[in-house]
Image (cartoon, rainbow, N blue to C red; front, side):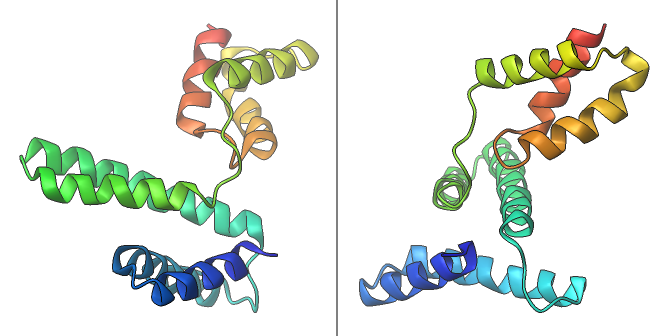
Length: 147
């Protein structure tokens, strides 16, 4: 079952259970995915494209939650955090920080690099770890190892 089919099924389940929070969050996600499909001028989105989009949605919500905490709007910040938790269900199992570090060290052991090769390293690690790790954290670890 594709991710889009899973999202559709979960929307129906939320409607049946009268879970408005889950229903509305997933409908918003589905609407954004439809807009992405139109922008990419494709008939169907791949699971990888959906995962990348969900990661962007999560990143936006994290930033919004931080801004709302600073503004002392804790109830709205909590809602953003709840949406993050719901969206994370659709991502592949996330690697721990130590697993990410191990993958980076393994890659660098096979492909020696310097700090000038950061772009190439990130591109190749991005293809390998996409959806399984926060690429911002990956970049931070790579920078530390390439110093």
